[in-house]
Length: 111
Length: 208
Image (cartoon, rainbow over all chains, first blue to last red; front, side, top):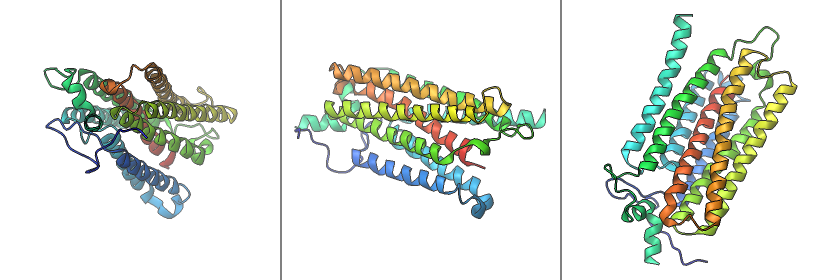
């Protein structure tokens, strides 16, 4: 093995004011396992649609948001990087949602 | 060994000390540029998803509707493959940050391979849908579906090209700890593509 070593603890270390340190490989694998479980839960709603009824859509949306957050926060390091990156990305997401709402409203109310 | 440990735990700081981030904000301009680009991409996909949701139910009587053709289990397997490619991407970043270049090459290659598997699945899906009678111009649902998922597929393909480019640079020894940010920026794009698929998979395929 190489002589390269990794910090033993904690798994996630916060750096200076800009917070540039990233999670350990162990943390990445844990996040991936969580994402797999969440995806499996999503898929499991498909054959259970009749049982879940009107709960299906809100349940799927919640699972989707959790998965989105895990990838953005840990894999894209938004949780550990400077807040400026989060602000830029959130601005894009909010504007994207605004596009969605504006488009649907236009077709609903002015069609 | 201590120096290697330091490099492993602070990819950014290594670059910071070499003066790469001597900017007005103290933040890498390249990284900030990628985040601005990804923010603008949110608007692109926001528009495409909106269009799909508007048109998905506008299917002529007797025409092919979403639920008639979607193979949820096949798409779930594709989603799993793309999700795992995000894991291998962060493992590639972790490898370069601790100067483990053989693992870097392995994980970059694995990520590109998983991305290619996803694209192969999408090509198979498109072919199957076309054989079932849903072409790009069959109805407005088909146009919206192929445009949205096709745009995403093009993004994945561009990501694969970026990954292979970085892999070639790594093989030539041009990706070192000091250049870890290159891998991180390609990773940001790749994870974004994964995030967009998380939205598409739920909104387009799973929500009744």
